[in-house]
Length: 344
Image (cartoon, rainbow, N blue to C red; front, side, top):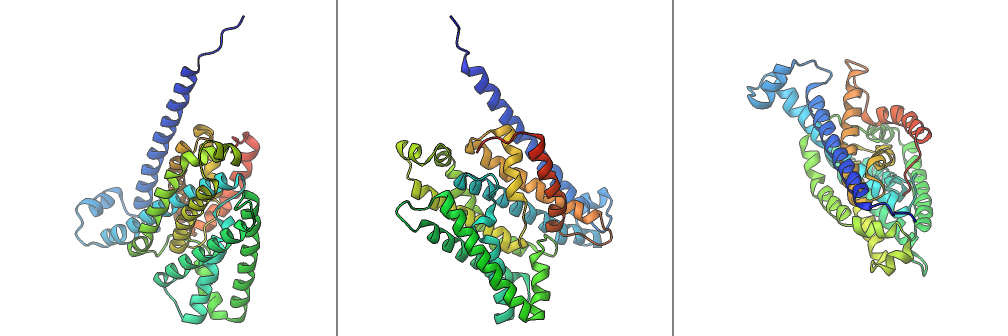
C-alpha cells in the first residue's frame, strides 16, 4: 500500500519559483534601464547622469541623457516587451517552438510598405516610415489570417504557418524587385531594415504606444484560453472556449504588438523566438505566467543588446538588430543543446 504524494507543496514551490523568476527579471530590467541611460558613445560620469536626470541645467551632458538616451531606453522597453510577448503568443497559437512574430508576415509586410512609401511617395523620415510599416504589418497579418482560415476547419497552426510562409515569400520578392530598380530607395531602405533604437525620438514611441497597449491587454487577457488551446482544439472546445475567436484575438494581439515594434524600430529578429524558451525554464507552460515574463525578458534583452552595441565599436555604434543576430544565434543553439525545452 502506497501513500499518494500531497500536491500542495509542489504547487507552492512552483509558485514561489515563478514569483522569484519574475522578481529577478524585473531587477534585470531596472539594471538594463540604468545601463542604457548611463552608457553610450559619449562617456558621461555617473554624477553627470544623476545631474541630468534630477537637476538638469541644459548642459551638453543633460541634452544627451534627456533627449537621446531616455527616449531610446523607453522605446527599447516598449519594443522589446512587445516582441517578447508576441513571440510567446505566436508559439502558443501555432504550437510551434520555432515560430516568431515574423511567421504572420509582419516583418515582410512592414518592409514592403516602407519601400513603397520611399519609392512612390517620397517618404524619407522615421515618422513617415512608422505608419507605412504599421499598415504593411497589418495588411500582411490580415492576408495570412484570411488565407489560413479558408476551409471548414478554420484557422489551424498548420494553415497559418503555410499561409504565413507564402505571403512572406511573396512580399520579400516584391520588396527586392522595388529596391533593385531604384538605388535611392535601396539606400534609404537598408538603414531602416537593419533594426535599431538609435535616432528614435520620444515621438516615435508616442505614435505606437496605444497600439502596443491594446495588443498587450488583448494578449494577456487571452492567457486562460491559450492554456486550454495548448491541450488541443477538441479539449479547448469541451472546456467552453471558442477556438476561432481565441485564434482571431491572438492574431490581432500579435499584429498590434509586433507591427508596432517593427514600425518603430525596423525588423528585429531573435527576441520573439528565444525569449519564450528562456522564461519557460521557470514559468513552465502556463501562459498566465509565461506571457508577462516574456514581456519583461524581451525588454531586458533588447536594452542589454543595445548597450552592448554602443560600447563594442566606440566611438561608433552597432545596431541592436545586428547585435542580436550575432549573439542570439549561437546563444539559441547553445540553449537548445544544453537543456531540454519545456513542452509548449
